[in-house]
Image (tube, rainbow over all chains, first blue to last red; front, side):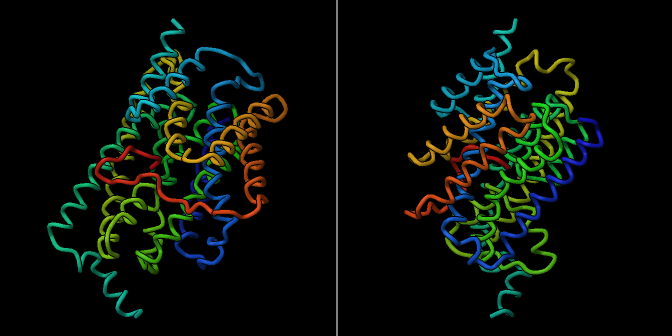
Length: 102
Length: 257
């Protein structure tokens, strides 16, 4: 993406995120209290985060590849399981991948 | 009733004793420091993904919701376009609307104050507010945490972005795996029951399966769309009340800002 397109993403994404925050403080409770709407809103982050993990671990452009990233992500999962702090999780993953690329 | 809430708004801490307020502010600063460290990794990842230092910092100032910022950078890094990256960020931000719903009764913010409060609605400020015993303390918790996280998250982002900008090839140092590692850490506290696990696994499979067939960035949206439809059409059982994932302010893990 060129710089102008990136700025478009930054500004449009920021405007959208702000609109959602403001909507939560402003819209009548009954819309967001609908059980199905609540369920979708609770599940969306889970689906998005899981999809992001999968794509960023296996995708390279439009191809699926197995490389040093997978080892890093597995180490991150183990670190999370061991209740490591956030920065430790990220560092353990990056160090693992970097070492495998030496 | 309206008049009474207006008076409280003018002095958000009117009913909170000085020691109680100090304790809340101390917790808020602690959360801000943890989030600032988290901001370091965001700044580094965003620059490694191809955002400029200024764009990275602008996102922290303007978007100010960590998971969405990580997601936007991740989609950009994967070669996704403006629509896919912005849409992924906005969809991840939808949980902030539910926090706002819980907060609006506590904050009772109107006019310009509401516009400002909206920007500070994030995991941490919502968690701190709903963890307090009464609305006046909730307001102190919300504003103190929101401001503390805003300042330190932006500072951390700036330092991380400038630092990564100094590296010639960040991916040599494995920074391309920092994104998915961060998402693993953000996802884990949400995987509390079986239906959630099923959604996560199905979304991951749907995303991977669609990688060869749709443009970069879109597999994540495809997965989210499938998950949303599946969740929406499932017969209503027990609607999980979405709660901010930071439960205990003093002993919490940093979450998405």
